[in-house]
Length: 523
Image (tube, rainbow, N blue to C red; front, side, top):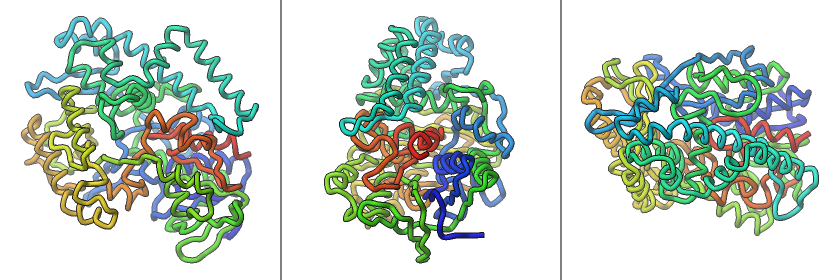
């Protein structure tokens, strides 16, 4: 049964939108989720080739925070995980690959041929990264006050708790964590290691899904962020967060899309409603107050509160519209850095591709990674790209950086389609040629392929400018400055309109933290 009125309306059935919907429906709210596509999940979905072989088109790994899994009883809604032990493998031209096992002792033995000193430091590094990831998780669980204005005592309690967690971490770890955030990944890693092979392998994690090079300030932060979301280096993580629910290292059974399917089941079990193929064309605003939404088919739906799980730029500039917002706020939203530069190439093979199981990276040196990033800065596709590769049965999935959304010869939005229509094949060939240098049988094993350009990420998955994180995770776009300074607590200048997507504090990657944290504001 459908209705045109509810308590809370959520735009977008990505994982954060579904997390928020499930929590709110569990509280007894009448919730409707509107999704543009015919399926739920946003970018956290699993799709198939024509023969039924599954692949994860956008995110090849990730897991919700343990407290979310527990609170929403997602195991009873179909979420299953397997305990796994997958290595992080840095490919080398001489086939002497660096294999970093999840077990620190095993990894240290693999590091010894590259550096005895680095092998001895590995345990200390892992301990620091786990502690730093834990502290960052506490920060992500803390509601950021609207600095520099409208600071409330209620919001200040969260900062006090965060300060206490930092203090309990110990003076040394606290200072090292704070120091690490603005550092370059190169600087941070050089404090621990001497081997270029090891440093480059770790630096690749710092730039994964971010348009940054390892010599950029703030990649110390993104290294910790990605370590947190993966639970370490390789895909197949259990987040190093707080709360119960962790089962050691885990991998979602059935692909990443099983997460959002379980969330959708939870929403429905709590009485929430999900409508697919229901594209929102406009958020209705009357004198700075949100009344509801208008769908592309003209239908109006009214709600006491509207929550947008799509990115802030699209929410404010396209759905709300600049005329309904304060001019200064519009200028700040326009200044949000998106800068997507990720492409994906998925290969269906006959199974004889020759790739080992695990997370494989092409990252031979820090200079190599920085040069790959340099190309993107000038609107060019990296001819020697950073690749991260995973396998799912016969499917080989290649994460390609850097392929900028704004190409030099297609910078105007109307030209983007033409530019990427030509360059799709360029990305595919670069990815295959680069990876084939390490696995000669790969090309001959290919049965079918599917590629996803930054433009596809925008048009198909709703990721503006192909930015996987709804806005770059940078020093001027994190904590109380995410999505913009003064609006870090899910609220907006429009009464009864809230944000809960990856573009707000706690977002970025697959975790559900941004959707969960909305509940601290929307009662």
